Image (tube, rainbow, N blue to C red; front, top):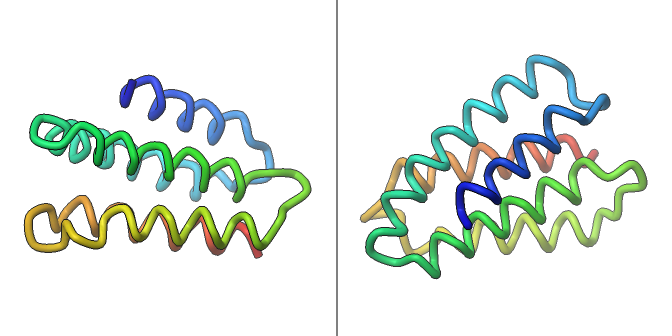
Length: 110
């Protein structure tokens, strides 16, 4: 399920004409890192890993919508950030990647 969700996010980013090539490349690199980190997390907490990828998918959807809804983007990004709050000590790389993704998606929503 996680690999499928990440693949869906990647496809959405690749197909979106409003995202600049440099941003696409950075987001796709971050997604590769996210997939690696979430795969590791899923070995010990699969539900938490699925939650993180689900919030990433929702946040990406909201940030790349043609008709953006700032409230939904804000809520989805809060959910994404909250999904990794308790992992700062045990999975710092995962938290860093999610924070970078959140920041980029937030800036795209402007």
